[in-house]
Length: 293
Image (cartoon, rainbow, N blue to C red; front, top):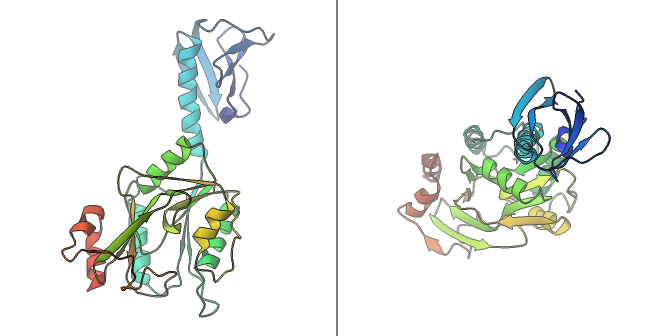
């Protein structure tokens, strides 16, 4: 039996118990060692593929059926090989939110392989969110992560956030950047919210970054790292079927943008009874209500 050098390459070297052959996943065609193509519906008693240390046997009536089975095996292998990182930039001036962020991460249906909290002592009084984002991305990519999620310490994330984003990223053939086309900010201090849609970029707190992206896109004290990141790289945004996250604003600690200003003009809706908030934040909502008191 011959062994595939790279199971995710799309070309599998197999045997049917008689002679070696190659199965091309992309075309479904089988070729014997003498390079003679076999008919598409040629039947085999069994197919054998070596994946790492395990043998996987697939009973098959046709090349087409076997191709589907092997494709599922390759998809599973890719998922196991994919390393996901999470970077949380913070200055250490709102520790209660860091613990909340960790709880939300622990509830994710798809767990990350690496978590990096960028909480080193501030070098100055300047805003340094961009610097921390760049530091975290560089470090996690150096650790071998294929993609990194930018995760804000104070925002809320649905338990299926990572899983949903990852699935869409695969469906869209792994773009350099992936984000949500809709953004909603909610200020828990005044119980007001506002939102907007953008097709060409996403906010940092719901952006996925692929290894190889250009990340040194602005000065370390810039407040528009996400805008510059999307300008420098090719990305795709999408509208999810459920609310995957909510930008929580409160005024605690140093803020990067205007959202923490309770009088920000984009807060166009009042929510004194928390009805809108509760319709989105389906878990850990009491934490934010306690912070607002």
